[in-house]
Length: 385
Image (cartoon, rainbow, N blue to C red; front, top):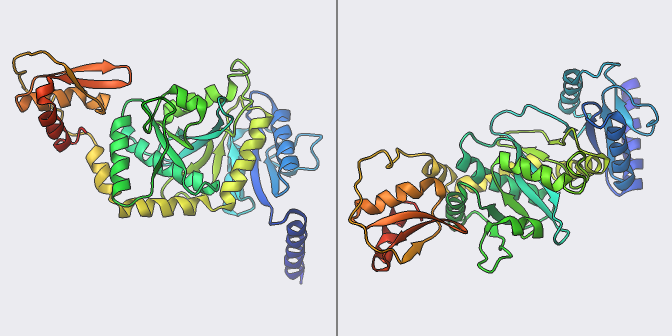
């Protein structure tokens, strides 16, 4: 009878909460210790999250902080041991006592990364940064391609039906753009955003990040991590992260949990936003959306495309002699900086004199205009364009 009474009690509580909030509450855990700003900042973030989000219940995990009795706690004793707090968080996730969690640190397995979210100052738009912690793959270009898919998944979990994607103009950007375009042409739904600069396109510059030109900015995780820190704390001189939604929820193939990351310098406003962000994407079943997006990408030939972007034996080490030098009055754009020297040697092999150079928007191949059409054909056949 006791078990039956408990079950009935839980059902009645859920009915009451649904009547109050318009839907079932999402229970999101928050590690209560580890912040450089102290435990009060963490608890205040939890309080702000609950006040601003009627459908959210925060469950603090760790030693209790006095003065926050309205918040539920999973207590771990008096010690501030982060390992014990993390263990309690994982147990709560496994037992489904919480629907997701916000942590200051988590050792994600290889293949799992996080998608951050910032407020862009130019036009007040939110923008996701894919990715910011963890790593979706060991190779940079492969990771960035997967980050694009994971960013789209998180965008959809936030209710963006067709998230606009752009790729930050860093090493690997052009290769990622070509690979993502191959996926798009094979049937995977990608909506490209547009740079605010005159030449447009989906390759983003710093101006575009400030303006929030896209919904998803694709980068490698180290660059993404730096961007998160800049966007979160540029108004405070770096000591306190006051803006944005944190480093975002975890995503990866087969990864079942929604664990979001904040910084040890994240202030209460960011903590509150991170909790709300986690609640929204967990309610949308983010792991299921990730699996659905990956299935669609695989159906469009993702595995073959990934194989194509993995490093090949370099032509740079081969003995390829340059044809006689001649004036170069034309440029070919759109070749990744990592492949530019190989592309030049590919043209040398075809008897076309070419030089590598760096333009204001990225690397270029310089050559005589009379060779332009033939050179572009060779470079497309070699996968450089």
